[in-house]
Length: 294
Ligand code: SF4
Ligand code: SF4
Image 1 (cartoon, rainbow, N blue to C red):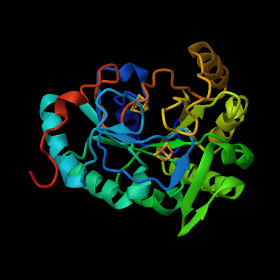
Image 2: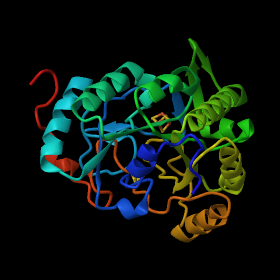
Image 3: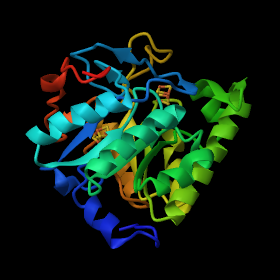
Image 4: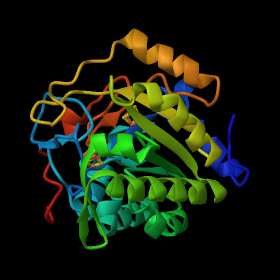
């Protein structure tokens, strides 16, 4: 396997119990804590929704929690789930566009159980600024979504970027996003952090380009890639885009697996998912009064 040189034995052992990084860890549970509502870019496939009990995909959550609220919910969940091994921050926006909340939540949970694996997912725009702090916080699993390594293609996927007080668009913004993603990926990998790169496969837009993305992120130290089919979410710019079939998806994954480890079992989970990957039980914990000091 493609472990970065600096990866510690502790990280390798924890990875064996991370259900997304290790397919055979399916008996272990993860909990996503939705503490990151804002985002600093606009992907044309995004449609973040709250209070949606029946839709299951990234960006959907039934509530946004403060770090303290997330901590209280975690205490309830860990009592019920002895197999809980991973706490993830996967939105509903971007973990690093809400860095104070992300940091606070990680600290609270780590104080309770330093052995838990903390995992965050990000679009990578703010990685150059926060990657070092993530390492200091003990984060050893980071997911970065990188959909293109050509800013011309990136410009078709993203509408705008909010960066250092400016709103950017087009190839200019896509280039900054890409540079920051690759810089962050390289830095994290050099510190022994296992980086999974998510790639949304968008038919007719970046599908032919994905093998190049995989090779580029491999060069920058990625541990694995997770090619996921576009979900043409209602109300998003890409609502009318064509669906990718399982056959097309798996053929592309197979082709890319010759270069880098591929994830085949992603469930494209909600931002408040709880439980084993095969069985989201977050509904059991919805509406529990955990926020705002209860
Ligand atoms: Fe939505 Fe995530 Fe893209 Fe932000 S990075 S716009 S939350 S899909
Ligand atoms: Fe794992 Fe995929 Fe779910 Fe993320 S969305 S927790 S990678 S299965």
